[in-house]
Length: 88
Image (tube, rainbow, N blue to C red; front, side, top):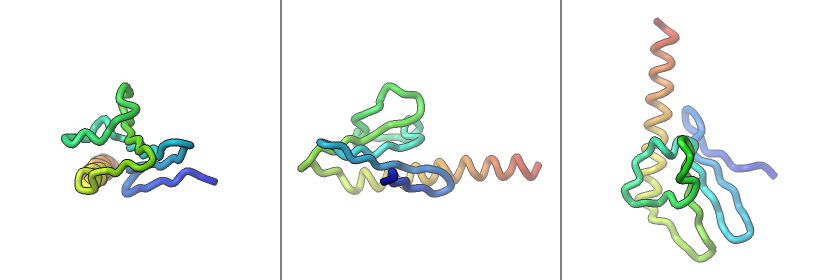
């Protein structure tokens, strides 16, 4: 079985399931604002950040949606910059 990947103009998030947790890893999570402090794993890296969800836990759906929207906006901005450079 493969790892699910959600993308829009680049990778947004991947999902992995383990015995006790589900891990959602945001490819550019270190560049995202996380005022609700959903990120609770992979905090030492320079690029990725993850949310580990233990069995029975829930995630603030509005904060999660905000992270996804911000990740999409970041990917779109990066793609727009690279498109403009290629046309120059």
